[in-house]
Image (cartoon, rainbow, N blue to C red; front, side, top):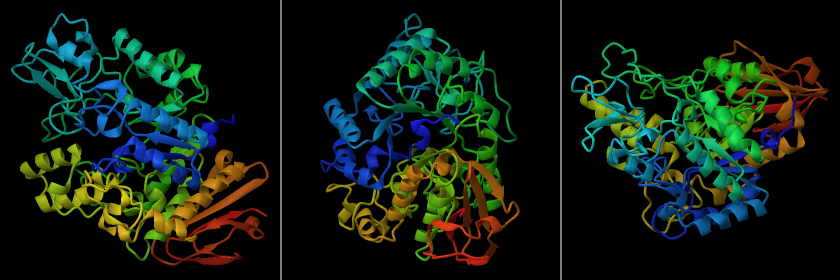
Amino acid sequence: MERKWWKEAVVYQIYPRSFMDSNGDGVGDINGIISKLDYLKELGVDVVWLCPIYRSPNDDNGYDISDYQDIMEEFGTMEDFDRMLQGMHDRGIRLVMDLVVNHTSDEHPWFIESRSSKDSPYRDYYFWREGKDGKEPNNWVSCFSGSAWKYDETTDMYYLHLFSSKQPDLNWDNPAVRKDVFSMMNWWCEKGIDGFRMDVISMISKKPGLPDGKLQPGAVYADPGCVNGPHVHEYLQEMNREVLSHYDLMTVGECAGVTIEEAKKYAGADGKELSMVFQFEHIDLNDGDYGKWTDRRVDLKSFRQVMSKWQTELEGKAWNSLFLCNHDQPRAVSRFGNDSPAFRETSAKMLATCLHMMQGTPYVYQGEELGMTNCPFGSLDEVRDIESLNAFRDLTSSGAIAPEDMMRYIRLRGRDNARTPMQWDDSENAGFTTGTPWIMVNPNYKEINAEAQRKDPDSVFHYYRKLIALRKQEPVMVYGSYELLEKDSERLYVYTRTLGQEKLLVICNFTDQETDYAIPGEFAQGTILIGNQNRESVKGTIRLLPYEALVLKKG
């Protein structure tokens, strides 16, 4: 298997609005990030993926961009950005930027010009259509609820927005759009950034003619079917030729709806498109009748089956991204582990072990290395996320979900769980800001914070440090092949990693029950590489403690 720096790296994701505020306005900023670079160096991460910091009216927290080559005023200036990039590089940390090019803001100059006239040279930068029978051009639904079309009286036509109505979709079928996007990407690469995380990149190619989707029973709008469209690989290969292949970059595509076969195209070992993709099959496992808005738990058997499928079927053909949470997902320990005081730390370490020992590039979302949890939002007034607010309005007004149930689902699955401020210490507002934070601080910051954990050698933080350091010492963690054991266990996730003569056995108890496990004979003389229960030795059958994780190296 070909060695690449991004295969051996550990990525840390920063959501800048919630990371660190340097000026007391309640919003995180670039200078706040600069002040915490030594923390990232201490943790040991190799790459930072930075969520959007571009100029934006902030309808969707920066994922609605009005100028790709300027910085949002709340976050700072381009000079601040340059100092941050230099500070990262001085510490051996690379920077991956968020690339949001499926859509722009409706305040981007391209769209302002596009909507001004049917004859505008920018008209074809977006999708404009006549209404049909006094309604929208087709029945497509927006990812943020309601129709994917908005009427614009300037030219008496509708424009397409697969997300917020302030996020009109770019028309990638127009060569001028692609040329301008690639020019912007080259500009950032010349600045010295080290790669791109590409937002909803699997949606950039729409079906020709934009046909109606198939309506589900009782639904008003249909799935647009825009993932993995007819020209998506063609456009990404053009991007690779025009931009990516000219620099030593790490690229990861956010690919909703991606299949194994599609992933092999997006992230194939031939390097024609991207380094890797984010797939969401394991994230969607506990969806219900109303998508994510449910209190179903993730079933271990299903989780193990999905993770194993991606491990085995991509091996040697494409590269995996390993993640359990990000800025769009609830906190990992609350979702996949146990966030009660009795088991939070143990289960956070167990989940980290299970993930980081797999083949692929691990992603750590800010606060995950502390075991930060979901936030107990008390009312809708405390919610900031447009997706959650729209869903609450639509699902409660239609009578589909009772308001109290919907609030419970938001506490479990809402995106704001990941967006509460980083918990730095036990001072007011968790040390995030001296002002009023833009979103509430999780009240458990007195017990869960970076300062306390850095002083405690048994903390979740120091466990992450060990895992990240091991990755640099043990090539088998990066390049070893994966084999699943205990396929039918209700409690354990057990697998091996093998590279030449090197072999690791990874044992994770996903429950709050003690569970017996017979160590395979070939590991009888093995040594403990890492574990979350301070075992000194293992022999024969061992009794695993609740949420215990153990990695043995073959003797």
